[in-house]
Length: 140
Image (cartoon, rainbow, N blue to C red):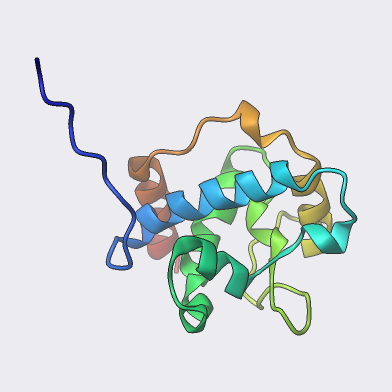
């Protein structure tokens, strides 16, 4: 009998685009599992996201790159910017660098994200997210 490939786990040392894939899965699960709750109860703080990723809440401030990749990927594919549901625990707003579509506010994007049926979409591959990351770096 052939030995199955070992399961791979996410870790703190992963590349930013690998961690972006983990963020995608967490955000999709969060949106889909909180359906029926009011808008403010469906937002996720940076600290809560960090905890779900298994990293310290102090490291949450560094998640803007991963969230930026998610936002850019969504906009490139005509989807609401899923990154907009992640907010600061005190202000309940996302950071200054939040990715939003043209003529949209973060609230518009968050509301649209919370109404999307994310289970219809496949998880983006790390290769795809790497390409988005590299395009972002070239544009900067």
